[in-house]
Length: 342
Image (cartoon, rainbow, N blue to C red; front, side):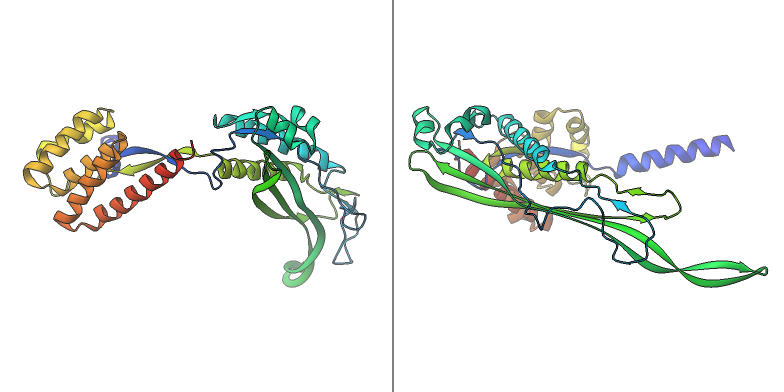
């Protein structure tokens, strides 16, 4: 019995290994949405807190839309969180922009001293100012009820009845925008708005306690603000990305390149590329030509890779090769656009 289980495990592992395709990393640059090549010396202002009006500010207690919930529920929104969110946005913005290595930054602690003084910032060598602000911060909480079926034992006989189940719903909407101001003219060059929303529901049990405190919304708000700021950074600075593309399987079998697949897994890319390329040139083996093109691209030789994959497509009409050729051209175009932003 133990021997049978052992052989079964070996078979499963072998099938998994055979079924796993070998992948190669493709690195390329993605351009920023806004071309900041002439504004790489950038002053960054502090993010001002959102200001609720007297009528729109979150309440300390959660309204009960059912009208029958017996307990008071206190809000999960921490009063005066607006300042905390603004500080978090400012810190994350400065850190994420700096991590790109693309900008020379004047931090908010320095920029804020020149409020409205674009000419002064320009004289210091900073071509533009980045201004980020909260456009909207909507926080909504309410209790509601829904009828649910319950089973009661009445004289040992199960009877199905209806009861009210209570729930707390929390909704958040956050919107931030940025403006890039040309310090030489004081004119706005770029502007974008980013937004995110979140919603979650919790069941409430009126018998749990005499009062209920809603789950804190602070972690969600911080995460949303942080993600928006990271999205802003991607819109402002070109970046490197990596995708992993699978080699084409050795079908039909060409025994001369079996070792090349192992070489790729071991990181011996140059050897594998030559083996695949040789087989393609000698026999027209489609997987070998396909794989040689991918390995050339992975090594940064994009023109060579596109030319070779084009030969594979023209020779075989293979749809998979055609899709890869389209992707290669798209990556090359993105990379060229991003390179032009330096």
